[in-house]
View 1 (tube, rainbow, N blue to C red):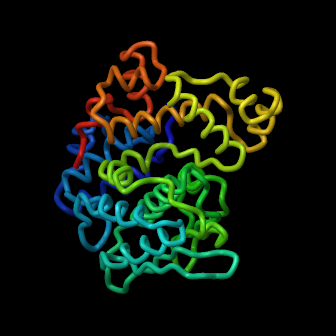
View 2 (view 1 turned 180 degrees about the vertical axis):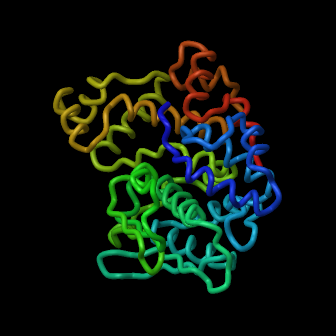
View 3 (view 1 turned 30 degrees about the vertical axis):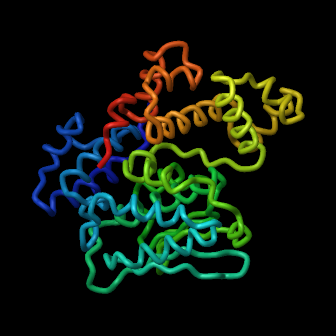
Length: 331
């Protein structure tokens, strides 16, 4: 995998641990990473965040005024998932976040065509560096995309600090939405028309997702909509029913297109069919591992792998962990 997480973000993360007496070199070694700090691929960064989170018992990695103990994100995810609509989910998210009384005040504001999820710094509360803001918005943004069935749930992001040297990397974290640095507050905006859309995940699925923070949140989330979402659902339906990945021609026929038309329209949306198939397979793997007692062999078969070893190799590539380690990695 290519390097995706800049060295500066890694250094910022380790600064929170250093404030609590943990040496950066030791934490890097625990995560199986080399010294000095370098750019990391997603799986390596996830592993380091996990090491730091467990060492500090803090899901915010020591970057804010008070610790957010392990399990807080899972409780929040469960609370949010019980909402019937995305609007109610965003409201629950803002209220829960504000109850934590840490370093930020959170609000949800109706701006007409857009609704804003905003975080404002509380005076005299410590915020160690801008990664403290990044982590909150990444976790919130990705979780809400996931709860909404992988529909893009926000349309802009802004930050209350100047552009960092690695500002181009923010496209990786926040996608193609407009970004603004140096704003008075930080936050996310989304179309108010989304407020009536349903929440697509159950409370149990949300807990399984969040209890591994930041494993799922920091994995690449190819938030899809429109035809890409329809394609994803067609792939997932076929895979669940038949235990095999459908061909592009089969999916095109299901959706009423010629294969070349589906390929062209997906390309216009910036996604390829192989990427969609991989994402569907990964999400189903995570769901089956966290919500069923099926063996690795059974899950491999349900996902269309010819043998369990091929599934193990693929899953390690997606998450940096084996299926067994992922299933046993509850906080």
